[in-house]
Image (cartoon, rainbow over all chains, first blue to last red; front, side, top):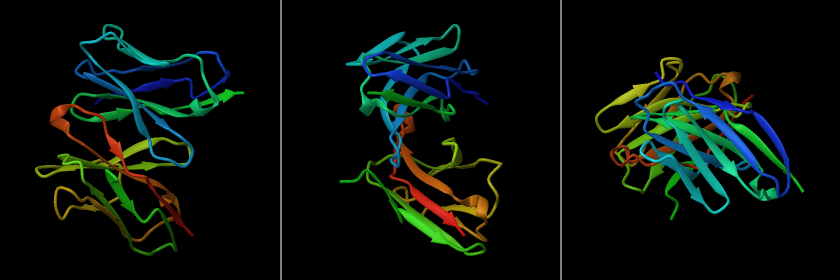
Length: 109
Length: 113
């Protein structure tokens, strides 16, 4: 089965700085890579996703990159704000989702 | 309208009891899921179910059983609750054929005392 590794497990950045979270996957059949944000006490919510036929996707301050050859993908958040503080999960999917172990991001005002 | 709704939001119960958590989705999705999130925030798949197939994570104790009266509902029944069952349980749904992401319910925080 698929194995998704996510790093780092915790990340603290100053407000305005960038944050990068990285994930690797093992199954070359995986073709869909969503990212979820989970604020404290709330449900995980989809914030951005990328498919295997695309190398990069951007939505305002967040972007995701995918390197199919190396089997890794990353979430980039620029100009971080305190409201970006949350746990972020990556996932890889062919016909079933496999989640990473989560990254707790803290943005320090 | 809430897309994926779970009830109850909080559940406190004693060891040995049997309890159920209900989940309903109004998105017309073909597949529903149950996840367990422990204190370390790991999201662990428990079950996935569509109208054709139930896939069970083999590490889930058989005290846990999903029940689906129709494609819009997937309830979770737990027998003989144990302290280690305390966690947040999330229901989710997706339209697998479209390759879209999950929509999660708001979660049920189960505390076994």
